[in-house]
Structures are given as C-alpha cells and as structure tokens.
Length: 403
Image 1 (spheres, rainbow, N blue to C red):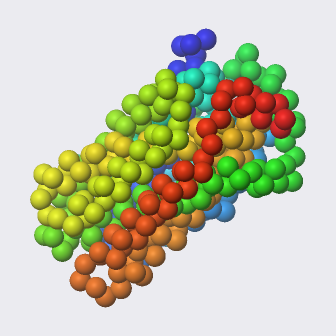
Image 2: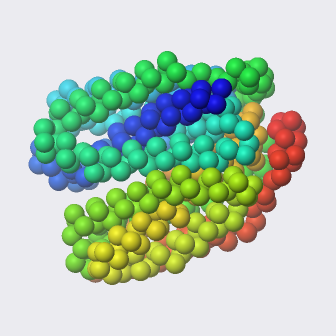
C-alpha cells in the first residue's frame, strides 16, 4: 500500500508539473514570438495571463467536481484537456491558434491543480499530509523551472514547432500514466463515495464561506500568491535600473524557483514532524520581509542569486502549508471545494497585483513603489497568520464528522 501511494502521488506530481510548464513555456521567448507572429508584447502576454483569469472563473467549479466525482475523474479530465490543446498548439498556423491552445490548457489546469488535497488525504496519514502536499507542489515548481530554463534551449536547438510537439507528447504521456496508475485508495473509497454523495454543489459551499478560518486562509493566499506572481512577472524591470541584464534576471528567477523546490521538500516535512503549521507559515512571511528589499535594490548578481535562493526556499513552501491547512479546516468531504476557494483567491491576487505594481510604479525611473507594495502584502499576510488557530488531530476529526 505504501508503494502504491507514492506511485499515485508521483503520477499526479508529473501531470501537475506539466500544467505549469505549459503555462510558462512562452514566458522566456516573448521577443521571439513577437518577431515570428508580428504581434505586440501585450498580445503575447495573453498567452500567460489567460491562466490566472480562467483559474478565477473555474477554480470553485473544479473543487465541486473533485468532491462530487472524485479526484481521479477531475484531474484525469483536466489532463485530457491539457493534452488535446497542447496538440492544438503544434499546428502553429498563427498567433491566435497558439492562444486557442493556451485557453484550452488553462481550462484544464484548475481541475488538475485543485485535486492535490483530495488525493493526499485519501492516500496519506494525517502526520504525512503536509509533506505529501509539498512533494506535489515541488512538481509544480519543477515544471515552472523547466519551462523557464528549458524552452529557450529547446527552441534554440530545434525550432518552436518541434518544441511544442515535444511538450505535447510529454503531456499525452503523463496524462495516460495518470489514468493507468491513479485510483482511489481501496481502504478509503467507501468514505470517499459517501463524502461525494454528501456534497450539495454550490449550496454545500455555504458552510465554507461562513468559516472564518478558511476565509482567513483565502485572504492570506490572495496577498501571498499576488506577491509571488508580481515578483516573478516584474523581476526583470525591477532589477534593470541596477544594471542587471535580462539573462541575469532569468538566473535569479530560476534560483528563486529552485530554492522553492528544495524548500517544498524540507519545510512541510518538518511541519508534519512537529505537528504544527502556523509557525512555519509565519517563518515564510518573516523571511520574505527580510529579503524582499535587498533582493530588489542592488546589482550584485552573486548576492542576488543567494537571496533569490533563500527567498524561494523559505517562502514558496508556504503554498503547500496553505493547501494542507485548507483541508484541515474544511475536512475531507469538502477538501476540493475549499481548495478551489483558496486557489480562486490566490489567482485573483495575481490578476490584481501584477497590474497594481505597474500602476504604483507609473513613470518613475525605478520600481521602488512596487517593492513597497510587495512588502505591504507580505506584512499583511504575516499579521493575518496571528489569527490562525492550529487544530489538534481530535478536533480535526470532529470537524470532519460534523460536515
């Protein structure tokens, strides 16, 4: 049974990582796409921005489907959508054909990503769930890193169409792998069917919307993921006044993601062993508060690589902690819907903070006002963590039974 749970988790992790790779694979080749398709940078940015926009629209519905039909169905269908539209991109007739492909992939993404909490609670004991969630999110960060670092290399070694064909083939492979090897836990399947039957769709979400602790998590996700999306989107222009080149900014962004990959494998595991999550979530915020300003206000590339790695190591595991805390608050019955609400809030933060950083910068020569905005968001997140209540195992079980 133990080997089965890891096979299930790794198959999910691979598909979730692919969802992030397909999202960000155009980010490092924007200038090449402008030349190839004779469109503006604003047009190219739609290839990236459709993902958080569609996530906001479909996140809650994805959670409902996960709770009512099960994570295997929801994640599997999301994977099929991603695979089909990844193949659409290969045809490469024009820019709008690429955009149609991205929209289709973006529709599948919430059904894949939101399935993690339900899968983890089905297969892993309570004292290993944050660690298992960390492994799942580690796969997402690996997908981001491979997209940012691997896409330019593949395009340079081959061409854009062959690169898209490779990505499509990998997506089809991982989707097939998921359908073959991922299934509900036989020991928990009866409980899952009961949970699915107990969920009342949109009306069943009313208790979640009245839960102050869950709403607190959602607001923290709004601010924290807004900060993450803002930093990764605008890191290059933030560092440009300090004579950091685009290539060097890419290295620093990569160090940030790689640090997050390592941190997602370490910090949630320690959290599980200690049986506490709030102190580690606070550590994520405190570390970011200390590092953000020096990371965004100097040109020493070596120091920036170190700071980026440290920020990623300590801040990005907060994503896995938020997911795990969301499930503990909502209970297994509505883990998918609660995750949908949390992810909706987080992606809404990304949708608003990215243009917000540009707006507060205005015509200034530097992005210092945007840096201050990021500091405010992280400080706000830290303050909110002071009101989070840790739940003991018996309290968690009682909450699950009540629902």
